[in-house]
Image (cartoon, rainbow, N blue to C red):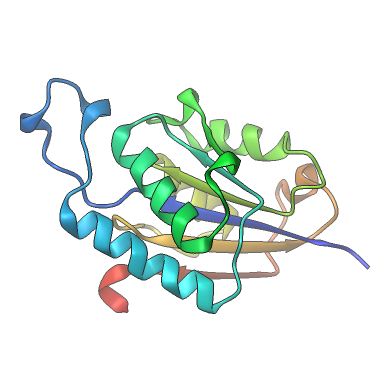
Length: 166
């Protein structure tokens, strides 16, 4: 029997505007971004989602979102890894990182930015969504033993969680 590989894509929470900071990477979450993160993570808890690893962009808003999900899902912060290449990258960069995950990891949560995170959700769901809002989540599952096997494969299941819909 094949194992399930699960990819949880999270667009960072609502952040302060760029005019409050010198650099985009330093933008922090607004109160709404923090609260939405906990609300959406609560839905993941109800669905029994618990990632083995959390990969996040180095941006302050993405890091904070990753820590919110880590706290809410009770994973421990030691599984949170900063990936500098996730700051405004393409879906190809995400896919290369996913394909290179060790096979003993069955669930990965990725926190990043648009348009890349939405492009990745679109690619993995074969057109299932065209937009992930802030704090939006896509959970995508494949019945396979290894990460490279998901390449070009249609997912066995996927769903979306959007803060305005909960």
